[in-house]
Length: 152
Image (cartoon, rainbow, N blue to C red; front, side, top):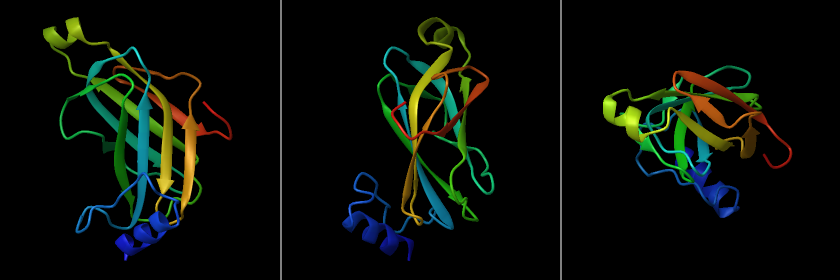
């Protein structure tokens, strides 16, 4: 059913840049595609976690399965499955935890910089652009991104 809904939305041109893998058992309930765009100039290593808030709040979902490089000027996407509909997206909270060892301390920044967050409510067919007052997220810190009607 979910695959058919995504296929219909894709045919209508609403989700042209998103795809739902056939037979992916992780996509259940109410899926939300969260896309984050990093800014230029920062490269870090660690874990990034994301949660969404609307009528309810999701648990944090890790962007990577393990510590990974977070590169500048790169787009990352994660699927957040909610057991209930979130309704209108009120905000997204992103946490960053830097990998700490001598090599990462010397070679990588202790922060990441995320310019925009885009959330696609797959079943609702709505897309939200979220911005923050500051793009930077320090290690062991978080930032809240809220809906914007214009560019970030």
